Image (cartoon, rainbow, N blue to C red; front, top):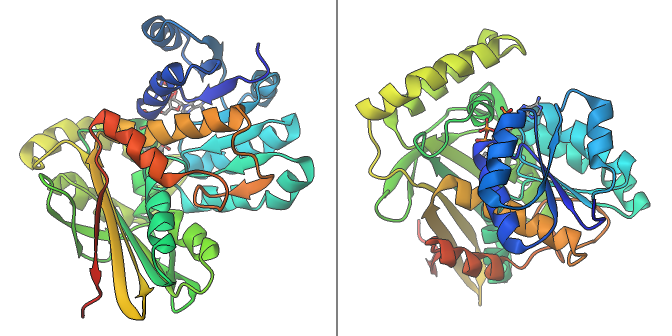
Length: 372
Ligand SMILES: NC(=O)c1ccc[n+]([C@@H]2O[C@H](COP(=O)([O-])OP(=O)(O)OC[C@H]3O[C@@H](n4cnc5c(N)ncnc54)[C@H](OP(=O)(O)O)[C@@H]3O)[C@@H](O)[C@H]2O)c1
């Protein structure tokens, strides 16, 4: 195995397969890791390059073995509330850099808690380099750079259940809409009720306005740390098909559905019903989107900068992961410590947004005086 190579965990998943495609295009050596040999072989055959490794995340010894001799571990296996802290720790102990698409607030916090150890070992751990978090964080960074003072960051996602219906992401959605979740208000982290809303957000055409709801994601935790002095960071989301959206929020209310054994059963049942629910309440597009508004002051005036885009969820998610993993493996980014994607000195957001245009993802930028 080449020492520059990337171990892609969850390579057979909906997001992992896209990341694998982009890695193949980046022309960096990589290993596709998953627990199903057949799926791995089919993916390897489709890509025409890469090594494969059959490994279950629960098998710690096998996982450590797989991590060795790689330079970077790229995490696309979820749910991350279960795996992110554990994977970060193993990567640290095996002396490899780590980057993931973790979208769970508790998983992100567990990775950030490894900051001092990562610094001491000279390793870089990056949590949440996907779509949301990921592109949302990069949009916040760009917006913040364009203002003289940042007062608030509002981020939102609209995910299509036609675009991705994997088990891991279904578990994530149930987790995100369950109980109290972190938000940032009045200059401090607070807990808000998941599912509260709606907050209408204007996504690009053809999706248009979508009612979004409070949900549990890493952005309020990481963006509030990255932009000291910010008073408010909110994160709201919605599934674009009405029935899956309503049912996802409803299921979040019942805590007995969220035990470690029960939630996977609820997720499996939801996945079986999804095709029917999607047909009953179709969305205007099968694309998914993000929207980020940074509010503050510019040249003495209250001002806002908004960035928003639509695209296939696997492109929005897999591309940042692949680019980030490739950059890490080639030593282009490498500040030791544990960070979110918006940390200074890691990535060039404008460059990543521009490269996304090759995949028909156009990040729109709107700005103007703050009203109301
Ligand atoms: N940051 C973002 O923007 C973003 C966007 C979308 C999704 N996500 C997150 O990314 C994760 C993946 O989503 P997805 O839609 O790709 O889900 P998915 O289709 O269910 O894929 C999950 C992948 O993880 C693997 N996996 C699961 N448990 C494993 C285990 N115990 N050992 C080894 N491999 C295991 C699966 O392997 P098998 O093929 O063997 O099942 C599969 O390859 C989810 O947690 C989701 O919440 C993040």
